[in-house]
Each structure stands twice: as structure tokens, then as C-alpha cells.
Image 1 (cartoon, rainbow, N blue to C red):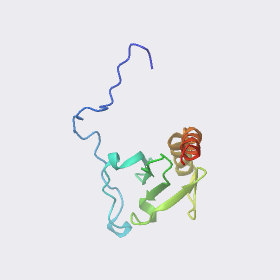
Image 2: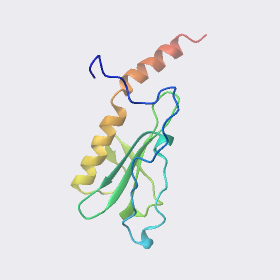
Image 3: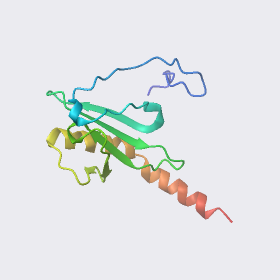
Image 4: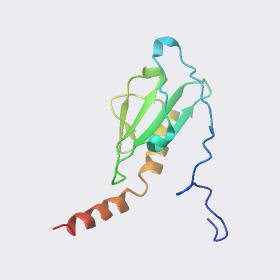
Length: 129
């Protein structure tokens, strides 16, 4: 970011509150009720849709220390089933190449600063009586 660039994020200010995107469910009713998320409820949130219209939602839970768990929901795996992501990989579910790349990319972005967060946590714990 350049020195002259002013952040567009509404830190400490009232957000505009308009919808950025609307994502229609492309899956059959037999895939279950699709999730209805507010991206502000998560530390990290991303949506994937491939050329066949198959959809996936990746999210990282908010935690005070910034080290929340990562999960995803995949329409083809029943929207109601939440799968866990560990070390950038889906746990207990086989995903195809593009889905695996999406999960890994989201994991990398969501956990990029975890080493700094862990160090901050260690310092705070070491300074407590």
C-alpha cells in the first residue's frame, strides 16, 4: 500500500452497510438448506464456484487470539455438513483438484500471520502473574 493510500476499511467508522455480492444456491434441494452467512461474523470468509456451478464456502472462526479454526461447507456434501481444514487440507472428505487448491489458498491467506499471533499470545501469557 502506498503512503498516499487511505484505507477504505471502515475502522472505527460506520460501515456503509450495502451488500457486496449475492450468491445464489446452485444445488438441488436434496443437498440441504444452503448456509446463510454474514461474512462479518468470521475472521476470514471466501466463496468458491467452479465452471459447473458447484459451490463451497470457506470460513475461519473469530477468536480473541485470532487463531480460530477453519471450516468449509460444500454443496455437493450436503450444505449442513461442516468439514474441518487442517494444514490447508480437507479432513475426512475427498475434494477435487480445484476445490483442494481453493481450500489451500484460503488456508494460506487466513493463517498467514498466525506465527505472529502465537508469539503475541506467548508474550502475554509470560507477562501474567
